[in-house]
Picture 1 (cartoon, rainbow, N blue to C red):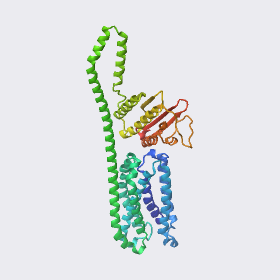
Picture 2: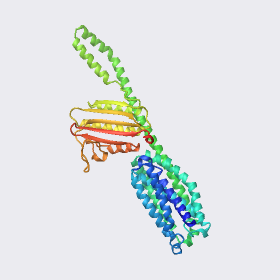
Picture 3: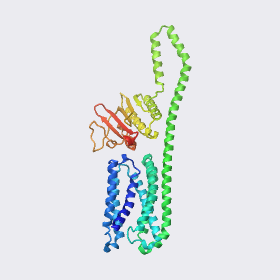
Length: 457
């Protein structure tokens, strides 16, 4: 019974810690199932694997003692393969993000393995007598108690924030080389770990300190990389926010210049109206006044909503549409929101650019309808515009309903450009982006939902 308990607990400490670390960097919206089922399934997998481990290695049967290390390694590998397969299935995020969490978990396992075996090398008689003798079990428990909180904080804070903030192209650029280096490090560790039992005391005494140092350097380097990447991302957001504010400032400056010119021309305008009045040209005077009213109204700076980013983007794109003789109807009601300005820029900028481009392909009836609001903890954006047609991928058929981005073949025509970027940004906030083309009315509608408070939705 003591053998059974030691080996069940030892396997649970190693395997269970890996499951926890792999799942920490992702919020509930990243999984295909609910958090309750996810936690229950993870606990069940860890417990069942741990309870079966002593039986798999043959308990204390003499005929199995010589093969216990090999059987234990094969069993651990099988359990890892099963977990990784389920891990890749239940997560809906990109492959590279899954790999980031997985490789850091392997780094934790390697560091713990090195520390435990380095200490055991100082007491050679305890090595390989069992897979989890009392001393080994105690060392795994102590190292887990010390290292798991550190790696857990890294996963839950730095890695989670990094994966949520960074775009895929940046993650690929920064991590391809690092992942290769880490896998090479783990491969070297496995090769040295396959040494014979007689070499282990000498081997661990000489090789483990450099490997532990390399592990520490990798851990510190990853932590620094995450923090630096997030800092660069925020700097980029601040620059884009400043650019939006600059656009607003330039728009206001232009209006001020217009006002100065209007004041300068006011004297000539009044003189012209006075001449028309003296000549009795009332009809001409009314037409002149109407023309002046239209010109002044076009120059007014419209305040669409209280959110500075959304308001600035609407001012910019509505002005762009007006220059192309496209009529915009805007209803926006949103205050400051806990959504990154760069994400609002990606969503609303893509939507307006798609709508304007689609209108430019239309000979007549150029218009865009924009509706923005906050309902039940979510920011909703809906934009409708004329569209000559869309191209659907093979497995989708136009049924008048909303479809995902993958239904539309990438291209500028029909608003297909940037749809995947919209969908990716919406999913980042636990929301979605859906698109609909109506053949009868020749209109394209985009509806985007961003959860402001995902945990409460």
